[in-house]
Image 1 (cartoon, rainbow, N blue to C red):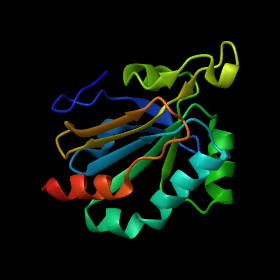
Image 2 (tube, rainbow, N blue to C red):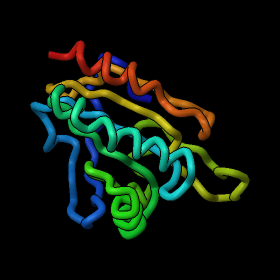
Image 3 (cartoon, rainbow, N blue to C red):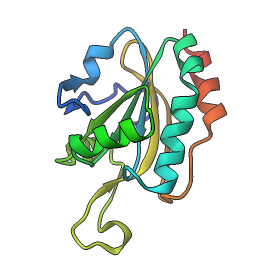
Amino acid sequence: MPEVGEKAPDFTLPDQERRMRSLSEFKGRKVVLAFFPGAFTSVCTKEMCTFRDSMSRFNDLDAVVLGISVNDPFTQKAFAEANNLNFTLLSDYNRETVKKYNVYHENFVGLNGYTAAKRAVFIIDREGVIKYKWVSDDPLKEPNYDEIIAELSKIS
C-alpha cells in the first residue's frame, strides 16, 4: 500500500463521460482521491454528497476531488447526475487502481468473486506525494471530513 511521503501511483481511468483521465494530469494541484465501494448505496451516496456540499472549501484550497469506485462509467454517470455531483467520478472497472493502492475488498458483502473498493481517502500534494491516508475495512464508516480539510490546509 502506498504510504504517506511516497509518490502516489499514477493511473488512467475513464470518467463518467468515458474520457480517459490520469492522476498525472492534476500535477500542480492538490488532489483528494476518495475511493468508495459502490454507487447508489446509502453510505457512499452520503459520502459523495458530503464532498459535493464541501466543494467551495475544496476550491478555496485549490484541491480537486476524484471519486473512484469499481462501477462502470455508465453507472458513475447516472450516480453523478442523480446526486448533482460537481466533481469527477472515475471508473476502476478492471480493479487495477484499487489494487495499486491496496484498497479493495475481495468477495465483497459475501459475493464470491466480487471485488469492490474500500472506503479510503488519499490526499496528494502538488508534486504527486501522498500527504494523508485513511483506509477503512468497514464499508459503513465514513472519513473524517474536517480532518481532510485540515490536512489540505497544511499543504501550500
